[in-house]
Length: 175
Image (cartoon, rainbow, N blue to C red; front, top):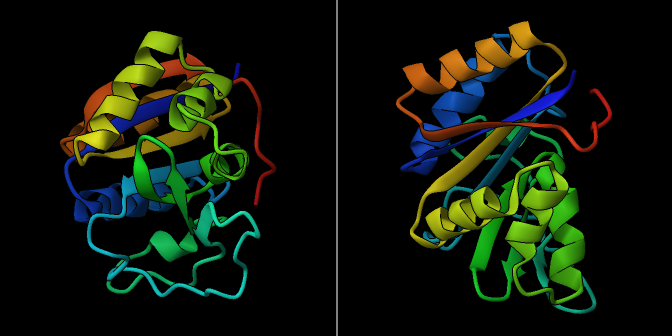
């Protein structure tokens, strides 16, 4: 049974470390999602501003590489402005879920996207609160219990907090 494993980390450097470990363990870019506040004005990202949303909710879709990290390997990296949460850097399957929320100006877009990914509402709201507090949210899709345990172990070894597992509501296309 497919699952999504979620966690929070304190910094973008911690997020990069976790992504590197997940990648080295065989997870694909389509399995991993990262969501973090854009508190440094996108200094860590090389953004391609050619794909702006007409509504203005998407600040800079389709970002390029990450300077000094490996988050650029992830699918669909970009910047979003979510009402009530502020500017966020998103990558992976969560980017698609949040993109619709941002373009529609949905309040509680982060919670809604997380609920859509299979999290119970109370956990989704808790994670949204962590993002507002400056934490980075990561998730990884697993196809079986071995992958789930491997992801949890990587999160624990990296010092991640708020580790949670849910049944995946949908499966992203494998890269």
